[in-house]
Length: 139
Image (cartoon, one colour):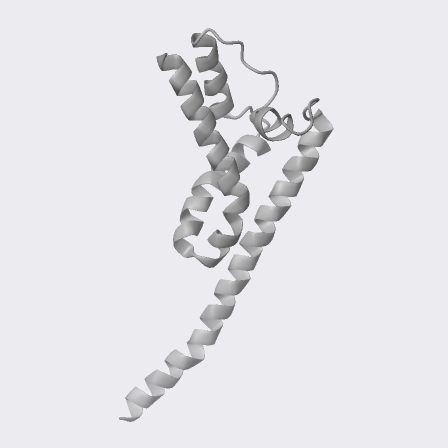
């Protein structure tokens, strides 16, 4: 029962991380506190995918399914839980690349938006702080 519970817990955490990676981009672009957590999810995900390695969470989940006496699924986590319920054959290798590129573009667009927004906010606040300094110096 322990191995089964661990496999399920890993799968749930993995799924929540993926959902946060996609849906968390807009809130992260607007809120620095959310951005910190977003980067905690994004950076390891990016490193694993750039290196072409299997996701450690998928490896651990399959390991615990084996320990629980279950036959682990073939392929990756995204294909198994996010694609196969809607498209039974799952993802082909070329499809995985297209999906990954779409997610990367989505994340990068929101990160770019966040950077531009912060630059605009900083540049808008600089003249006000200079005006305060000149008023304080004149008093």
